[in-house]
Length: 496
Image (tube, rainbow, N blue to C red; front, side, top):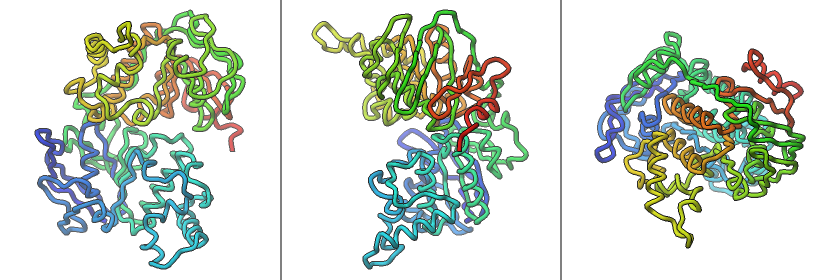
């Protein structure tokens, strides 16, 4: 497909989101679409997919002006979108085969009754064409995040796919799983499918794309072949100013041990001994499924934990979230929308959620005056950009949602902060602000445990990194020995 966008504009009330966007995607071309949160990428995606109608401008498919009145019209043209929240489109209690065809059975098989065996055979063939070996009888709820994402791509391929939009496709994937995705993107390219690849990870952008298009404030600020660009030039086009230091790490570690775990055991981790000092950031490296996220969840009372935990030298019990918060342990979930925030509630309500006891009167009633003053101060300090604290947190950009999540836990005055993928799905500018928040917390003596699949981030923002494999710590890396290659070597040695 040759898709052309010509002077596309879209506003919502007084908010002008797309301000004359023009670029094209050729057959078998991978175009990386990058920009800060709020730049217009999501709205543009919805225009291309038929979910939004442009106020003006034109879409041309193979040179013909085309109106995509709804997503069904876009799919009829061979346009598919794999959104960042792709798992919402899957049915966890149905099999892989049923997920591929349950909503499309008549188109594929006709009107007659279809046996599960025939459906399974067709699903297996479709997956093999993509080089994927997944048991099509398995329930989707049993699949890994990477397998579910591949399933979504396979579902798209069951149609006459001509253009696919991938929105932050590696956000939940580790290094190996990302490589599998890259192989699929290359297969799509070779098959002549046009690809729009949306990512904040510039290493992926440069490795995969033929061309880069940058959006800023609803306008195209850069459109050039990837081979003619540098990361610095792309970032400058995104944020308007040159960014010299992606990772403004400050060294704030002190001698005092704040978090200590001895003989920690859980369902997916074993024999964990760990110390984190005041102001120190300890990264945990490893592939998805190695137990690193499970360890953080157990320390926050979300999963069973045996062994001893001490905070500030005192033994604590973390059998529940209430225990953890009472011990001044905070946890940033990797899924802010499902676990971290109440999307339908206001920014103010979300920020105060974990601190209601401290904001209450003697009778247990929340003092609105205290709540407004306390949340207003932390929202301002962490630079959460919201038109008003009373607007729904769902109306904020991804980066500001993440900062609101930080604000919720800063309100609790934590001594220990557990962070799982703290910059997932946020743009370069928001990442820099999140790193500033981390520096501010460590300067105040907070002990930080950091899980991140972004290896450059993990290396740059950690004082040291412990590597986890198959539920156990297998290495500790510091100083000159702390680099991406060493993390991968220890994480993958002995792995299948």
